[in-house]
View 1 (cartoon, helix red, strand yellow):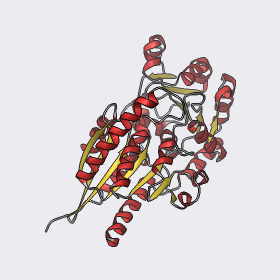
View 2: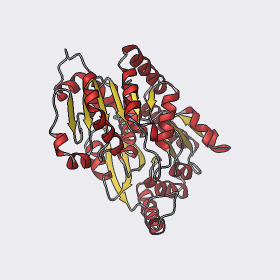
View 3: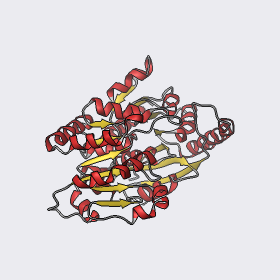
View 4: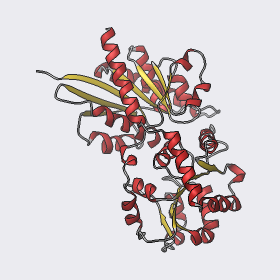
Amino acid sequence: MSKKKIVIAFAGGGTGGHIYPGIAIADELKKNSSESTETEIHWIGNSKGMDSAIIEKNLLSSGGSISYFHGIPCGKLRRYFSLKNFTDLFKIFAGFIKSFFILKKIKPDFLFSKGGFVSVPPCAAAAILKIPYFTHECDFTPGLATRINSKKASRILISYEETKKYFSGFQKEKCITTGNPVRPAFYNDSSEAGKKFLGIKNDCKKNILLILGGSLGASQINNLVIECLDELKKDYIVVHQTGKKFAQENPDIMSSGDDSYKPYEFIFNEMVSVIQSADVIISRAGANSLWECAVCSKPMILIPLCGAGTRGDQVDNAEYFASKGAAITLTGKDATKENLLNALAEMKNSETRNKFAENCKYICKEKKPSEIIANLILEQIKNDVSCN
């Protein structure tokens, strides 16, 4: 007896933020594979950059289904004037043509868009080929790619109920609040492994302060931490992910680590357990890092990226978490040494930290967004089959 095959395509990439949440959903969908059903996953991403490496490591190498990666040319969508807007139009068109023939060949039952500029050509091609698709927005305010993709999407999946107000008319009716998917590892407590990796003993009296500067580093956060370092070390064990650029420019600081200051250029496989071992986290306010920390119920001090070159999504994300009592936000000129030390002094109180942690749980609810979305996709496929 031959197996029933379900083919599902994913579109997204350019950054890990548009890939890892999709991988979490793909992992849930792969559980649908059984003796009678085979789930085949295809990922359409940027032909250049990190996309293929992340997919190969996290999706293609794991069992449970057949998975493939397809690279397409990508052009970025910008809201501001740039000469690259003209040259990137050709890349976008080339990405659309390649996406069209990829989808026509693999004939997916469904397409899921995780957003970002990489997802626009596959969604446009899917619309022409009459392939149903969902588009997911991880930020509090929808980006340009989501606004474009949402026009033909069967459903618009959003991380926050309040995000519906940014859509109008029939688009608002298509919105479903699902939350933002994070990898399954964040739901399993591995805090002891994190302390072991950091070389911190269980009987240590100091709380752990984790500073996340991203893979390239956030100069604003890094400079602020170094300015406050002597004060921070009095009350916390400071675990500082600096990013590559800062590490290369400040070798003396990177080699100055001790029991109270532990600098790392980047934390790779151990990041989940390190986050879970932390008592307080200082971070930017990217959607995925926010949800990863919130799922682990971690009190946060957020210093969002703002100003020229950003649409303000991190500021919106940070302000939402602050409004729900899940984080303290220091935006722009408010990100000073005095304000940071005051925020950390507030976090020294265990009752205060517990309050922030509970509010994080409230935002994330109990059910996993990856499970919710996977079930919505399978339900949509089932309904489409019954209608045909």
